[in-house]
Length: 193
Image (cartoon, rainbow, N blue to C red; front, side, top):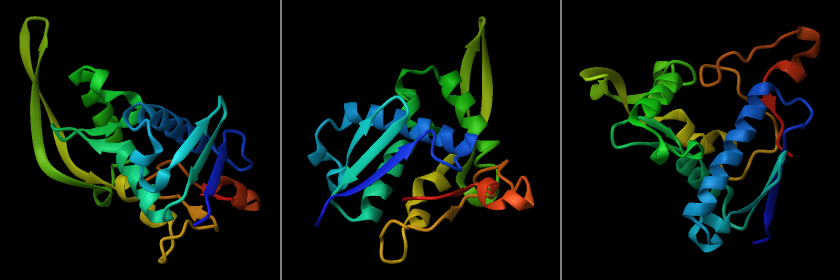
């Protein structure tokens, strides 16, 4: 099987601010995964990457779906407490309060629609504020849409799609056609090359 490659740049034509935030998040995740899986043999499909200040280059030999499914599941995780965890943010180095704030932020924006997240109900943690214990409640997550997004990136045969992928919807709030005459540039459709 010949090697496959995908290059992503912050300055790609048609990229929105949300696309750029995603590229930066992917860069941060890959940077962390380099520490955890330093050898290509440890990664699905021999996935390898190079990172620059404004771009990412991915290379792999395996099946597209398996490679991207592995990458997304490594990038978007769930903590023992049931928090949404973004690997690129180094959650293991954060306080529980910071991790809960990120969790609540994700739940109330990108994961606000009930179909975007599977929950195990409400849970709580106890933190000290001053000298008082305070109970903080949160929605405990079992899984969320970002973890399984490889299904949208790949076709029925498991190959990476070449056509645009519409990302307007509950998973990505705020994306909308901004002006009908420029709908192809402002609709939030990602063009993979």
